[in-house]
Image 1 (cartoon, rainbow, N blue to C red):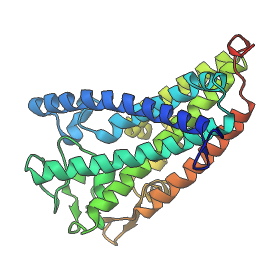
Image 2 (cartoon, rainbow, N blue to C red):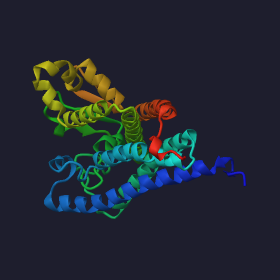
Image 3 (cartoon, rainbow, N blue to C red):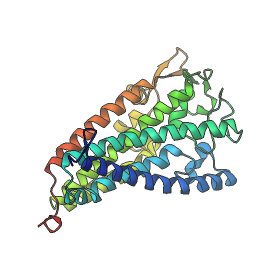
Length: 311
């Protein structure tokens, strides 16, 4: 017995199966909870952007971001020692981690597009009435991804009249671009969760619990702040940061370009946002590679607790 299967070690295949199972179980439970929550929120009338009243409900990007990040963190925190105790090498563990963190977002994107197609085809979708095609505003709402159904968006000069936006005709390849954007988001979330989990586990292993707790607290504060970015515009000490979210500034143009929305302005102040999905896709791939490299550097230096080592 060589312990190899088509060039792949049994250790690697076993670890990969376990990692995919962890992701699968968490996401399946999350989906089972998401469906009734969507139905309940629709019955209550909280759909689309108004779903912020109940964060995570109806917004698949936000909802599955949380699940992906914490599942990736849990895999790094709870399963590393068990894997090594069962004879899995660090290299096999890292390969399984990276492949799972890429395969799961891809599978989620395919499932999202399939669900999107089904609700539209069956006539149960609620579409944003001011857009060509069907930009979902009910269950399976995904604002950041759905924008890529269109080539461009025009916003009037009044910064507070976003509801008056007009869009191009829906692109024939729009659903594909939506899926690519959704994939780029999920891939970035999985990479960040893996990195945060590896850093926290490494710090805890070194006995630096205070630093680990501080990172969690800082990350939570950043999450809370990101949900209320408009507040930055009214906090004097935050003016520098707030400039990144103030319409028309160079910083804001940079942030929007990084999200795939390239902004330009006409002479009368009308904002034209051109959607380029390849920008966020390339960024997510670079981020993924960077996070996996850092995690590998940490993994090579991580140790398991002496009490769990084989005698």
